Length: 117
Image 1 (cartoon, rainbow, N blue to C red):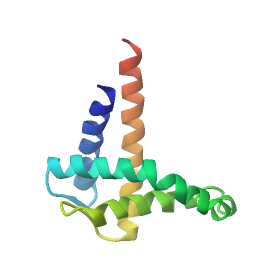
Image 2: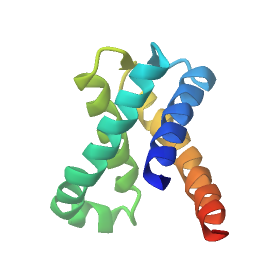
Image 3: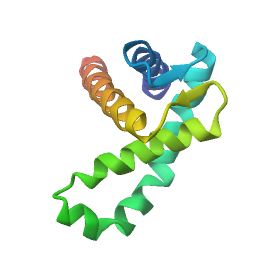
């Protein structure tokens, strides 16, 4: 139940990012659900590989390169889907920052909600 709720709230967060920032466009809630799923899969499967491969750069930049990796995952998801579009790398960077901040709020709220059970 928690996973499904997180997926739906992540899709709503993606719609919020599109509403707040013009560089990100989502056509519908269904497209937002699909985009949230693809972003989640990319972050689960591809991101760890990229983090390991770019570890020296990440260490030199004191971890700031992780923002670039997050933006690449966000941008890659937009390249795979039709109803989700990102204007460019800068838009992906800012969009991924907003989406990550909303994701932290969602995780915090869900952990409090499911802790009470």
